Image (tube, rainbow, N blue to C red; front, side, top):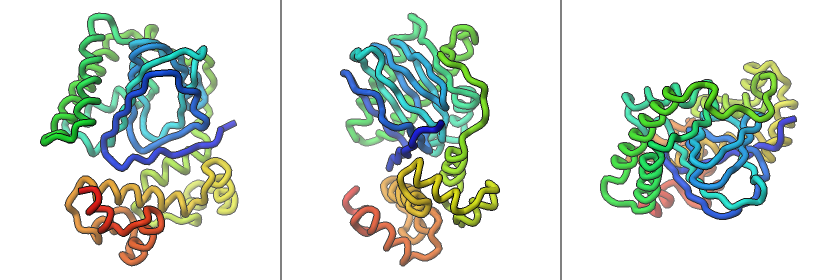
Length: 282
């Protein structure tokens, strides 16, 4: 049975976080529109990905595709240290996006880092985290260069590791496809800029509108329309943060054909107008 699902919304195309200590298990599964790389510096953690359980040990890398349901679970009450980063495809240049395929498709991939590569991977991760914190001139270029280096090294690691040496699921199950709610959320995450309604979802998935509405409330805790607005407004915030596009252009890009409606929804969700939000973030 699918547990309740939350959706992580990052306002940046690149995000990185570090934790050291003893954090309890995540209470809900979650998914997001970003690619995820998880680096287990010390200790161990259990990863639940699409209903399967994986043991992640010290000096392991985990690669999770976008729109995949997952969460981490505490193991034996032990302390651990990890770095996790999330990034959008748009953060990379076109030539760099080629590096994503083998790492994230047909996954998840949990790859042990061999001793001769541990210092290199750790240093790249450390520099990524430090650069992200500092907000210096040229930060985005430097972050992209470091991420590209990590992706290249990770691809080489994956190629060098035989399938028998990658971490397998602790409780392998027969794949039955994505649960309905994950399919619906993934569809909205990909198509939010288009005209989406309960009716169009009903036609696309051959499901009753009321059933979809109940499914959303049950697993996400919010209505379909509230979720759609949350995705669109979060994308609008990202454009306001990272581009100089006009506000009316951004409204259209994220799926609002009526600019007045966009301003009203943005203020309802964030407590301020798009213009005020952009000024605060400058």
